Amino acid sequence: MDKHWNNYCTMSIVHFMAFPETIRGEGPIVETVTKIAEDPFFGAIEIGWIKDPAVRAQVKKVVETAHIQVGHGGQSALLLQKLNLNSLDEGERQRAVEQVYRSIDEAAEMGARRVAVLSGVDPGDADRLKALDALAKSILQACAYGRQKGVAITLETFDREIDKKCLIGPSDLAAQFSERIRRDYPDFGLMYDLSHQPLLHETSEFALTQLAPHLVHIHVGNSVLDPATPGYGDLHPRFGWPGGCNDVPELTEFIRTLFKVGYLSDSRSDRPWIGFEVKPQSADEPSALVIANAKRVWQEAWSRA
Image 1 (tube, rainbow, N blue to C red):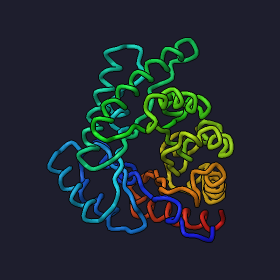
Image 2: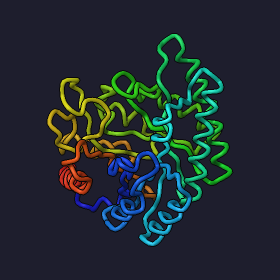
Image 3: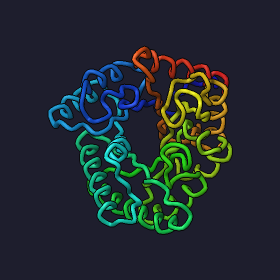
Image 4: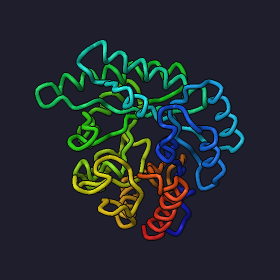
């Protein structure tokens, strides 16, 4: 592309994946948020739950001072507590909804306008329709609560068979589900992650064409399909990881398709988010190097797109 990406999108990064020591809502959150906020490459940061109100206040000061936008990733709070928004057990389903309410409260406190969530485990063919109804009930509750706080809900799609094994899921089903929710909440939308594309056995053309009217957020990263290869599944290794699925060529094709379906466009008045979701796989992969890897691969892919 001849024009800089800042003309088309807002670059973000998933803080709690780049710095996995913070994923449980504790640890060096202020220090690591500050590292991202100091980098003008990023116009936004995606934070997760932060358990200590005093730490939240410090983080809010950092992001306000740096003039960086904030999004809230509620996925880790659901996953780590094994909560399921499409559980057929009403008590379990409601506990998951209540966690999303807490995420919405934190998002509003931090100035985030969206909370990202994920569906629960796919129950299989026999109960899938019931699970979709349960998920719709949960998402509608979350949207209603979020509307009171000025926070919209984003549902991220995940793999169906390999790692998270989520109900949503394949892109065609995700688009159908989004249509159902958007009848009542037009600001609801979907997030698609290049990392999940190989795990869903999809292509950029198929997935993004299906999802285009519903997309409000994009993630880019890597994954591994071979069970015998380190990093197998949805672990978000760096680009170029041995045996990984995504590197410069795949990201280049993904960017081209984002333009083709209109997610990236000269005619848009906003600048939609594209976020890095990359994670160090060991102690000898410092977060700073993994982030530098993502930025370098993005720059190269953009120049080729």
